[in-house]
Structures are given as C-alpha cells and as structure tokens.
Length: 351
Image 1 (tube, rainbow, N blue to C red):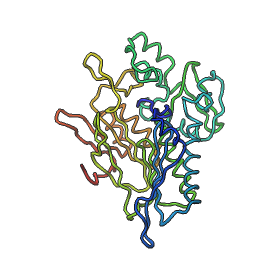
Image 2 (cartoon, rainbow, N blue to C red; image 1 turned 60 degrees about the horizontal axis):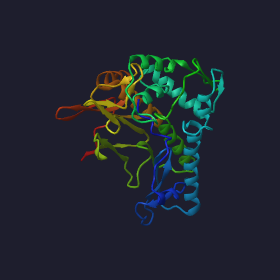
Image 3 (cartoon, rainbow, N blue to C red; image 1 turned 90 degrees about the vertical axis):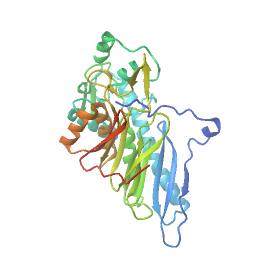
C-alpha cells in the first residue's frame, strides 16, 4: 500500500503559516461578454493541498464565499473523522478503543465499506490495517529503522489483516477482532474528500468543475472551452514532477498510485514504500505506477492502491477480469511500457 502521507503535518516556511487557513482563488482568464471562465480555489488540507476549478461567467463575493465554505466543510469533515494524527478524530478514538462495538458516522462507514469491498475483491492487496508493517519498514512517523526479520514480521502480522475489522453497515458500527488492530484510511480518504467537495460544489448549482486533492481528481461537466477536462498523468520520475501524458475525462475520477516518490536503498537494493499486506514485505515487481478511472474518486483511489500492490501481472489480470479502466506504467531496461485495461482512453497528448 502507499505510504501514509495524508493527515501528516505540513512543514512550511514561516510566512506561509499565517495563510494556512486562507483560501486563494483566481480567474484563469477574464470572461468576455457571456463567455465562461474557470475560477480556481486552492488551499492546504490533510497534509497536502486542494485545487478546485469552477466554470462560471462571473462570481461575486457571496458566491466565492459559498464555494470556499463548501470546500472547507467537506475537507475538514473528512479530516476530523479520519485523521490518525488528531487524537480526537473519530478514527483515532476507534483505534484507541478495545474490541467492543464502536458507533461510527455515515461517512466513516462509507469509506470502510469501500475499503473492505476492495480488500475482498483484490485478495487483500488493499488493507487499511497495514500501518504497523509500513512503520516497520521505515516509512512511518519514525522514519528509517532496521528492516524487520521474519520473527518480527510474524509478531506484527498478528495485529494486521482486513478480515479482523468487522463493519455492520446497517447499524453503523464496527469492531476489532484483536485489540491491537489499528486502521489507517489515508490510502483512500483523499479520494473520498474529493467526492465530498464535488457534492458540495454541485449543490451550489455549479455543473462544470474539477476537484483535485493531492493528485486525486474528479470532474463533472466541461471546462471553460466546452471540452472535457484534460488531466495529466505524471511520468514516473524520482526527482522531477513531469506530466508524461494526458487524458480527457468528464464525469469521472482519476487516481494514481506509484512507488517512484518514496523508497529506500539498503545494501544497494531498492525497497519500495508499497507494502504487500499479504506477505508483510515491500513489493518486488517492476510496476512504476497505475492510474485508475472510476465513477467516484474513492473507488479510483482504492483500486489504484490495490493494483499497485498486485503489480503488472496480477494487477493487469484482475483489472481485466473486473473491467477496471486502468493504465499501468511498467519499468523496462529501456524506459517504460504502458498497458491499458478496460476503457482507459488513449492519451490525449504526450510531452
């Protein structure tokens, strides 16, 4: 699974700290007569940042405030429910509880339901209880640590496993089968936050918008030029953020998971931050990244994580079986090969 970047505190320059709770917005191009413009709202959230683009002929101050309020209510609500860094959050309180039934909100139940559904369909490739294994391999809050041996892994795995988390969706309760289990939803919470923001924006009457949080994207309608939204897919690069190709989407979500940003080298060997919950060890395949298109961003986010764990063979096979729209970028000796499954579109352009 991906390293748990969301919900971690931002380390920012002093001049930026004062602006943490402010939103910035600007008009991409001024409207000419009845022509529409794209208005962009951006700000920090959950250890990363959001960018919300809304198409409108014009926006007065009350409309801007309404959009800003809808965004902040959505992202702050997800953070307050699912942060593992806030002891008062709903998820933190569940993690601190014992094995008794624990009442949860509708939002938390929705996210846990998706996590468990994808876990079952992927054979456990997505596992929101994998945190102790991520920490043990040096990708948690403590940073670099000595890699665990077989004995240590066996001990850790006693308190890891998605089957040990039980959800009663109708009663909106969940409980742990083992007291040491803890849940970390940061692999899919950003996607859910994107969905929540989009709902808030659409409830204000805006039908053409693009929402992005930490690289996870969902769109509705068309851009200011009346075209589908053009979304870049990053080229796997360990140093620079470079768009390798782009796809045009409308009314769908796109999420990407990869291992090229966060890894370690031990004795000359590359250790990926992507931990396979089934083995307790970092993946050893040559998949650089996988991007998934879905109707909701939480689904795209969850499946990008699962397929990234499974790799270019198991992942492609499962994506084909389930009809998932995915793009796999696979490392080769000469660069990268691309594999598309389902109806993932041909790239709209390449740089």
